[in-house]
Image (tube, rainbow, N blue to C red; front, side, top):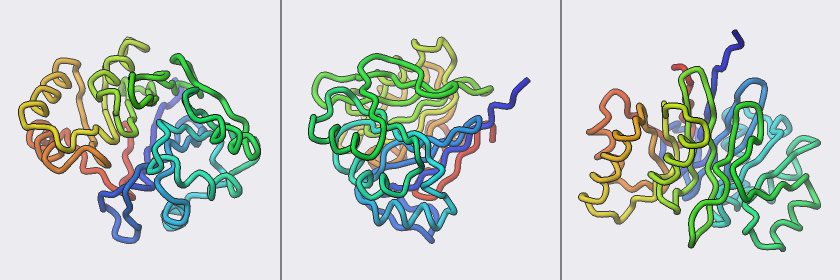
Length: 241
């Protein structure tokens, strides 16, 4: 049986983890899986992104696919500096709702794919398709031997809704949800409700970062205990561990 070992490296985040790396507001992670190198989001600026990748020994030229979750600059700002040093044959997946000017700029450097509905973007790697009615966003779902790993950028459409969509796409159980949960400023009661929904949906492990908010991160840590993963820039998550 073919191994489905998955490595996710957080290369840009406002939460510290590896002291060698720079922190800044935004998010980006590298997904390495079955011979694929997929960058999810590009952080807020290319100097920080590229410096962190260099410190981690990540060669931008080996990135084959970039997926952008939504249009906000803290998730797309690093793209302009990354495109010139990325590998040939690069494909960039963006929600169809992205501005035309942004999409045309990408087309000058890479193949652009506009996402509307859920679809496979790589081997066992899927986009949820466009979600939300205000800020439109896509997330990723990766099928592994440990079931499903869900990666979110900012979770503007609601992190519970994203998990539901990812689970509905595959029918698999959710092993891990990683990324920004967008819970900063939410009340304790609201966060408790979201944690209860995670439990009801069978989410086994969580790695909240970026825009999740300090209070929500503390509450997820308290609830999940050993199944809580402290996330931040430079954190490497292996599935299976």
